[in-house]
Length: 635
Image 1 (tube, helix red, strand yellow):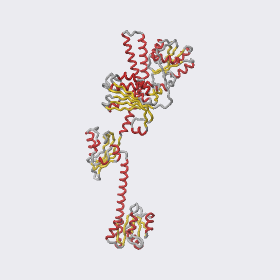
Image 2: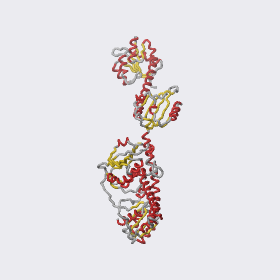
Image 3: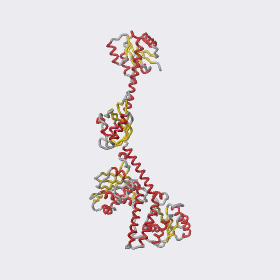
Image 4: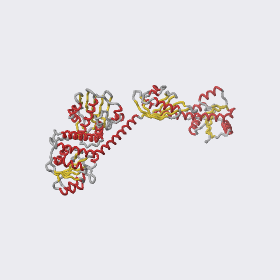
């Protein structure tokens, strides 16, 4: 250890030497410095930095009380002993009150080593205590500023301490809970067995870890993760319990939203995977049914059966499209739209859809912003929401459709989970129906989830709405109360580009052919056959090929006669885009119509969904095909 540093404040060198000999006799290892003026003393305090000051009480120009006062003004505590020739009881008391650690009469200087050791031990203990207090203050500062809730209770559970995070999470002030039992936070979600297990763990001296739902002062619930630990005294007896808790409500909400998104994405991939084969088969059913109906008259019994088959196929087509909309893989033709104009165009149909007992209120916002979306998707959204609203209203009621312009900033979105920053056009549909419970609200966008009776709903309506909105980079919020009603709020991004409007008019009748030659390239034989029959029935000459290489051979043989190529997009040997390029090189002026049962996302990789490209989505009817063929030929 380093030698003890002693500062002597003494004007008599003989007294200093005597003190040195007494200390060395007791084998004390030290170095020293002697001063007898105030200036020298102050310099030694900063320069020599003594561990111990031994000062005479009275000197010609300086005295021990002044030295003591200066010493005690220093930030660090230094041991101080008065060494004097004479001292009465009153003076001794004054020195101790002023901060001296001890005093020694020079006549009894042999006591000096013992006084030094005793004083140094006291100073050491004092410094250790100060250090412990500093650590405690530092720890309390950390606890006070911690984001986690910190709580200390008596063994009976009464609260001794809570930090500011507790106040922020629960809404209770510190003075409102001190002395109370934490049961004031009980939500009723956990049963008695839960709390019994927790207290059994704690009273046995073990740490309890778990998750619970508690209630804030305002009555709202929150979920927290907690670690509660027994605190023991030196004998091992439990004297307190301490709890560190974290509010995980928002974390759980975000995790639930992520899991929901992942689950819906998985279903979306499934929908996309089955779309191709399913749509091929539906095209065959639709085509043959339409042609069979042409061969019979409406008064024949089979005509009604064929009608039912046709209607079932069309409903199946709608289900496929709903699945693809949900999966955000529906083939779409977005346009720049005024939401008010689009909704107004549907109002007549919507009034027929909901019936006379329900009052439909239309509240458009003047000057609503433009959006960029396929108009048929707005039709799907409104139809699905209005049907749900109609079914939720048991007797008479009201349905309200509104539009508005809304802007969300980062502060708002930080406080409202699921919201996105930016400018949006709001489309809101509200009803005065039965409303939904929190449990129902958690599942409403899941495909095939329905609260309707058997045969009264597919469970795809709201999944379709969700998919369409997500496909168009928007989001949905739902507000509902049992017995009060429901509001769906659809937020679609504002379109900020140059406004444009696509106007198309459907022909009055289905156009037929004039003997034009059409080459169909399709690896699915059923589609190939029904396509040939449908086109031949309306005046076209049709050649078919099962693969691209066969199509190229036919092109070489019929190059002068080919007017139109109808090709599947995805084929084993060569994709439709590459085939079309080679065919047009052989047959200049050849028109092309692409077809596919795959989803929009899949075929987009093959470059056939560019603007101006002729495309027909499977499944299609004879009428759909006739229109697309005529448009391609006249293009």
